[in-house]
Image (cartoon, rainbow, N blue to C red; front, side):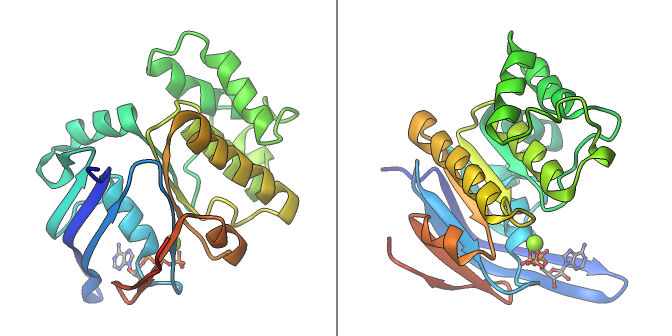
Length: 226
Ligand SMILES: Nc1ncnc2c1ncn2[C@@H]1O[C@H](COP(=O)(O)OP(=O)(O)OP(=O)(O)O)[C@@H](O)[C@H]1O
Ligand SMILES: [Mg+2]
């Protein structure tokens, strides 16, 4: 079966005031449709950067990144934005909620923009499923880090994306809440066939994925068999 995601020698090099930094040094791997993949590795090893490349949010300095048969490295910003909207959900490490919108609006407005007719109802259900039914009208600044994280996850999963990229989805959560998030993610896969790629420092979460890949210093270190 054709992989849903494949990268070939993907590299990311940034030139900053501190000089040139090689963040990803040639990443080649494939992800099968419906697979749940954990991306692990030490802080600074490039996990978030790789997720950004896969989501077309950062452009590769070299190599190829193919998602659903399209090479992201040949697409312009508008095409990438549309492609993401139609196929991918992304949960960032720093949430990126819109501060002037309530939890409900943060989830519902993007759905509305995507043409979903019952956007607010679906958003409400999605927030309830991550345990935030009592926080619908709260603004991000009125919520804890873990609550904001759950809003971000609800926002990413509500459109039922084919691919969900999540950076530390259970990072700020206690065990029980983390478990609920895991259930939500598994539901996306089981009911909607979603492919999940999760960055995590949690061995429990990694263990529940189909496959674990480890980054070290911008390279893939191991690719454990399923
Ligand atoms: N804009 C940037 N300019 C220069 N270096 C950067 C930039 N963004 C990230 N880096 C560097 O790239 C490396 C990888 O960063 P990345 O955020 O991908 O790591 P990570 O594996 O997600 O770490 P963590 O587990 O702490 O989130 C780090 O050494 C970081 O300092
Ligand atoms: Mg990171």
